[in-house]
View 1 (cartoon, chains in turn cyan, blue):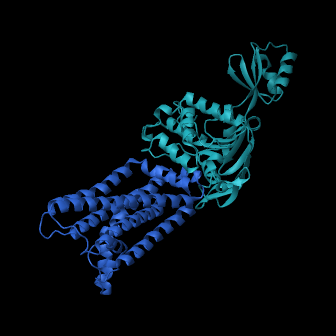
View 2 (cartoon, each protein chain N blue to C red):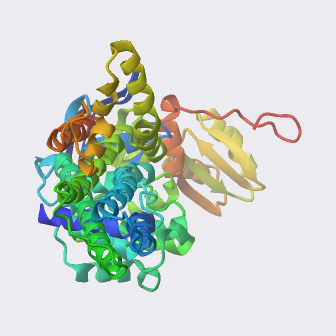
View 3 (cartoon, chains in turn cyan, purple):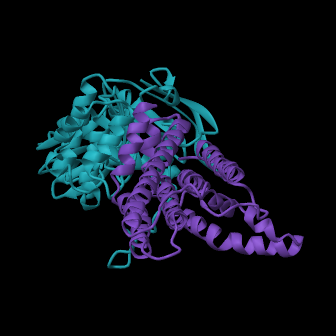
Length: 310
Length: 253
């Protein structure tokens, strides 16, 4: 269990994290989302005592991180896979880490095998790709078999197999009852992996909920209708307050009415329906909508080849 | 603390640059001292004191290299970002700072001890073979000078470590470590000498004073004695390390 309360961190006049509070429950993967510069990494660093917050607390099972005697046995954290000395081998990197917390050397071989780096464990880290460094970082996280896991963008640089692997690992670890907090910009992955979400923007909490209720709350909802005679009831739908957009021939999306209303309307007009389905926007749609007012950096809209803005 | 000392020792010995610098720090004084013993040992006027002077003089250069090793031991942590997993693994930062400092100072003092012992015993064996009487009895300051250069190496490492903690940058820490003793102190000492009218003031510059621990010549030249030099330079080294430790403990990692 992680409890963050009133965490505040300033860099000069800029407030990076602003009275941020949230709780992370064990047994599920919790996604930590926010636009670039929203304060996710700073929050994680503050939680681990690496950055000094101006105010607030972060407790791991009721204890501040600085009070943990052998932290690697309780909290495994990967903030950046690049935090390695390029001249050291993977095994030596894990050796100093393990030695600092009195972890047996045999555990190093176990975690290297878990992450699939056994055959390259003696190679210097400058020869490692980002994906390999991510795997090494995860090996470091698993060294002390901790009950709490904190990962900042763990899927960065991983190939599709690696992304699926990390998803499976984190889901497996959460099912064992561990507390897993993961930040990521890969929202499709997060949708597959996370049950809970903490969403922040400009250092403030925007939402803490389950993924499904977050999507329900923020994403678009509409009804898709496929019918060979759908044109006949477009007028009726519009008159009933629905907004119709044509997707393809015989396929329409209707907003403003639910499936029941559209289905009953079609029945009254004796229309043939090939599809009547409720549609919901993706986690990405919900995220963009939820954080629309909290983007630190926004891009200029690129012009289309015809000169229209996209 | 034992776990931390082990961890820091693994870090120190698993970086190739440290080995390269250590080999140079061992090799340079030994090669010069042993060659001196071989080529000068058969000449009239060559005394055991000359061999000790060569040995301690060249080991001062090794001490400077040890300072570089010590500085890089902490600045590379900041440079490569490994300080973050280090502090995440050991949240009590002062324990890390203490363990790292102990490891690097002890390692460099062991290195200097090996250089002095090998340099003296092998060098004197060669010189004796070449016909020189290598007794140290006429030179009571020879053994203190050899001990002094070992202490100097440890303190120089502590100074380098302190600069590393304060600057967090390898180029800056190494530049200070080289420019300060070799250039800045000479200029400042000369300037202060002109201003105060005291020519001896340069001998009280921190590094100049520290290096006096390793000299065989007699004292009484207006500068600090060997013991004073040790305490003075030791205080400077501890002050720098204390400032650096305070800074590391206070700032974001």
